[in-house]
Length: 265
Image (cartoon, rainbow, N blue to C red; front, side, top):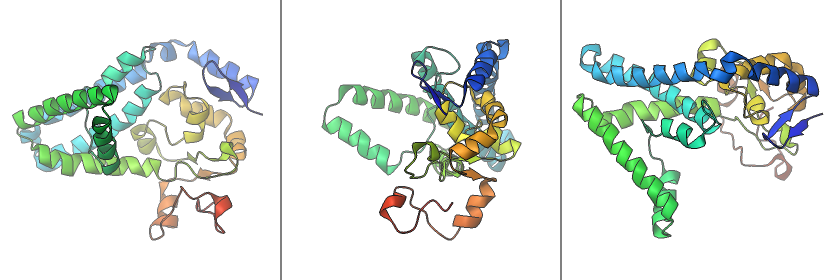
């Protein structure tokens, strides 16, 4: 039975789990958020150092490294949104505007245009800040002899594509809300790149648990989580590849409104 925690929007499997996680939260490692601070240092310094030495590294190596750091940054952004590494949301938000890499997509552009048409002041201010910072990023790229156009096409797009590997069928339509989020068991490189967000069902239940604690929570109660989300557990991203490399999937279609479920489980 899930035990909701309204104060932290958490849903515990049982009292023992809540006690165990709260005990971990009192440890020096969790209180200091050291892994997240080190992650930010690695991502940001890696991104800037790669640009600074891109001429020495060569176009291929520097592009590959920038894809890695940008993909990692996108995972880091998710962690910042959920209250890490500080308890002040505005400070966490500041850590996530500094680079602002990414590729504008159709839906985002439509939303941006709509906000200006409707004179939504807060949204307009956000977009103005975003483009100002984006301009600084492009100026830095140009200063280091790295084409902004190449960055958008050869770095941002692949980075978002890699992120889509994690988010592919991360959720499914299901009558039971507890069965809508997936668990993907995968290797260490993928877990590190995606900051354990492959344990998405755990993350949804316990959004306050830092990325380096999600796997530990999953391993403690993996059988219960697998039972609770009705077996929506994937044995690695290759399973998605085998099932859907030639067949599209529409997660917006609810199984109750179609003869055949769309989630493939």
